[in-house]
Image (cartoon, rainbow, N blue to C red; front, side, top):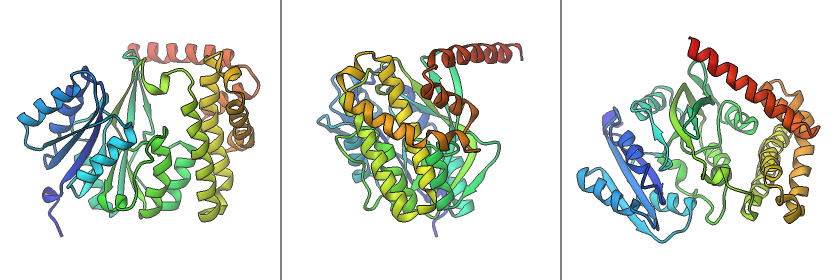
Length: 337
C-alpha cells in the first residue's frame, strides 16, 4: 500500500482563451499544501495568449504537462487530459476558477481515512466579481453510500453534478469519458462514475471557487446546443429506471430542476421561445412532470421551491424582486457583523 505522500494527483485543466485567469488558476493548484501533483494543461486551440502562458508555466515547474490541440470543446479537452494523466487520483479544475490551497490535501485525506472512491467539497460562487454565495456546503463531514449519493445528485442539494469540486480514484475513469460535442458534460458522466464507486465522502467545507463571469457559457443567450440537456434528462431517466426504480420520483425532480434552468434562459432571451418552440415544449413537459414532487419534497431548499412555484405560476418578476431584497438584507447583515 502506498504512503499518502507517494500518491500522485493529476489535476486536469482544459484551457481556452483565458489569458486573464489562467495564472491565478494554476497558482492555486501548484501551491497546494499537498505537493505530489501533476498539472495537465490542455490548450484547446486558444486564439489568445493562453497557450503561450501554459508553456511558460511548464518551463518554471516540472510538475506541469502541456498538451496543445485543435479546438474540440471542454469534453474533448478533459478526455485528452485523462488519456495523458499518470496520477493515482484525478481532479478537474476549470481554467477561470481557482481552489483553496488545502483542497486536495483535505480531499485525499478524506478518501484514505474513509475508504471511499470519491471525495467532494462545497464551493464558493463568485457572481460577476460582486458577491459570493456558498453552495453544496455542509456543517460537517458526511459519508454517502453509492445509492444515497445518487439520490443527493438527483435533488441537486448536497452533491453537485460538477466534476470540479471532487477528487476521484483513477480507476473510475477506466472506461468512462466525457461525451464530445455536447454541453452539460458533467451531468452526462456523474451517474456512471458514481455507479462504479463505493460511495462518496463530503468534507463539508467550501474549497472550490467557481467564478461566474458575464460571458460564461452558462450566462450566454439561448442556443440550440442547450437542448442537449434534454438528452441528459432522458439518459438519467433510463439509468434510474433500470438501476434504482425506487428513485423514479427523484429523477422527475432532477428533470424538473434542469428544465427550470432552461426555461429561465428562454424567458430572459425573448426571441428564444418563438425561435425554438419544440425546445420550449420539451422543457415545459419535464418541468411540469416533476414540479409537484419537487415542491412536496422535504429535502429541496425553500428558495428552489419558491423559484419553481414562480415559474409555474408565471410570477417570476415578483420572485426576483423578493430575492433581490433578500440578498441586499443578507449582505447588509454580513457587513454589520
